[in-house]
Length: 452
Image (cartoon, rainbow, N blue to C red; front, side, top):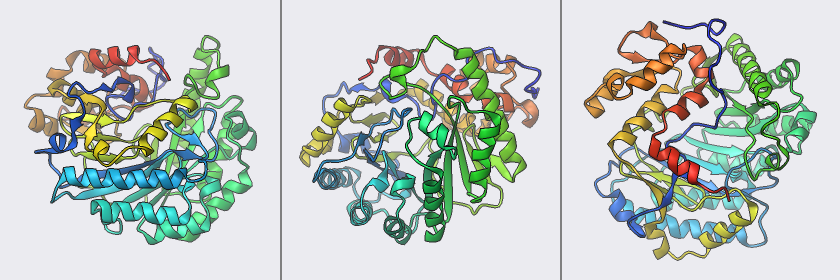
């Protein structure tokens, strides 16, 4: 059946945590094989359609809701030292991958990659191309930016080096809401940055917005949506606000007070935002992502996150092989983050030839990851592809979970038995549904993680 939102009331909290990768980094631990060799980890792995990610852990400010791995500012010489370390890491990774590695897409994230100055962005692109052999002008390249750092000289470098997508973190066009989220910016500065981005000619503009900010109403939410729509962005991401431990907002947030009302506010604003974008020529790709229906195709269709590997560089990145997911240590507290960055910049080339923290995958976890990452897409998951990869049906492997989702009205049966697809209500509850697909082992690791 296809449920309607008015017929099925939420039976679980819709907002539990962002679900976008599996397993979550808080499940990572020191790898049992001490200092696992990257050459060993990548031996025998498919390398014809890899994803490349560079992490830049610097921001000019830290928003009140942010629990990402980033620090405020950089003392003199630190960005140079960080790029030096990235160069050493790129050399070690290239050596581990060997000949024949091909990248299907690339991304610079953070943090704020455009915290780097124009010349430093040139060097970052050189590291991707000369250090790892990625042809940035021939593959999709996505870069994250903030309004204050989206300057004309930086944008010119990014456009010249092949950037196909620029994602701007706006969060709200309403100045009072931005201040409430501890994001010091003014709408005039945001509009000026958007004008510079459009002038740079980067094909795809994405604008990030957040709903659930204190005092936000459908009227103010509509003002932000319409302000974004005025720029006709090719993509829009609508994120629910989360308040996490050790963040600016988290230090003053009473988790016991008003959680049900906050859930109701976020769910109401999500539905309003979704319907508003659908009515203005956008299609829903996932709970968070909306794409303009006439937007150009971005490319990179030969990469599939469920099956293809990811190569991450930088101290906040993670990498995926079929057998092991690995990264560096993770923290939210600013003091801890600074220590991890300092450790990263002090590493020798030999130190980068090994993986220290991670998660060793098994067949069950691979099934969970495939189902989770496929099902959370609005187009759904063809059962045939799952059956071809694993030799079994998702209805057999996850009978209890799928029956539960069906009973809640989260599944859309209109595509027949060969397509697993979420209903509109299921998409709205993606962050709850995804969490319920976590294995007991992952849950145990995450519960034991001590925030730092």
